[in-house]
Image (cartoon, rainbow, N blue to C red; front, top):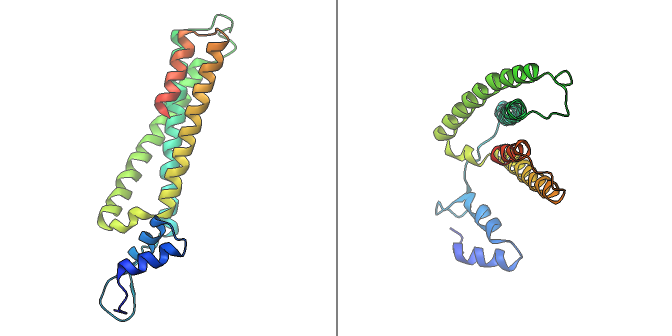
Length: 179
């Protein structure tokens, strides 16, 4: 087109302080059409509907994980009861019913939306680069990493205090697996 090669452009942008990934993204947004003017690639627009669907997808994932953890915790407490807590202090049947209710509702929503959104991405591959999808994915990874850090810190704290029980270790393992 203008007589400037892609390599020269990359070098000019690099000397102007652009990072390699920024250069790749910027140049990747144009098609080499052989015209005197640059031709931008079609940008996929993420509609409010798609943002809503991604929010519901990730929320259903969070709810499923939370209540699966809650159910496993309750099963651990039932298998390894704490003798210092009276049965009247807690209502294990109620906690189990709530956890199962949320699991039964949130997991099918997650699966259905996951399938639907993946089908949409397969039909239009540029949708894979959705900013909402990326932000929610990285937010989820952040929450998982923070949860793992807190889980390990809790384990170390209890090891240092000499308070290791089967019940506690199973709960730490549950949190680590879910994260």
